[in-house]
Image 1 (tube, helix red, strand yellow):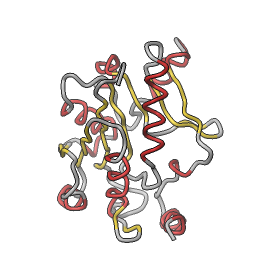
Image 2 (image 1 turned 90 degrees about the horizontal axis):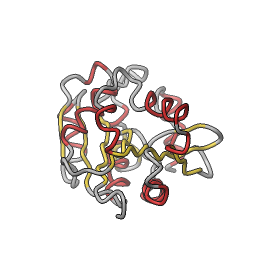
Image 3 (image 1 turned 90 degrees about the vertical axis):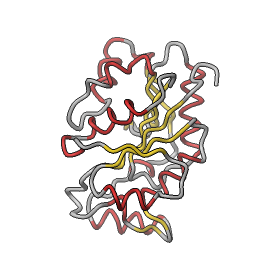
Length: 206
């Protein structure tokens, strides 16, 4: 990779799933769980390595991915919000990481192709680009790729804001620093926050 020699994927799998009332990462989709399907898609992409951040129900999440080539790191502060898991992942990443790809653990419709397109777009757009992300219909989302140049700022994120504050800053100060891979549909943005959402996701896999 030219400008992103090492892309570390940080798979965020620590959340409480408060709205659903049970851990959505462990829900079955066919013969696999949500988090396992997501992890396998990222592993099949061009990332250099995958760090999976655990938190809520750590043992069961670890069991769901135990035979996959992911490196596990635990976030004891997971209840404080998604940013703490991002930070845990960054701190576990190699020092020579060139970019961090943040993936939500509940993106089972993610494909290796989408990940590769985001990485490729970022590389083609360097050195001006500092962030690359997928977008559909004016909505931007994950997995979002951040240059390691933004590491210090990412380490100071708080709550559930994640990298959104950085994206807003760049949009105001230097719009060319953010590039978007435009998707043909919004599949990877589908959430599993309610039982109805889960039923909709199941239909996608039938």
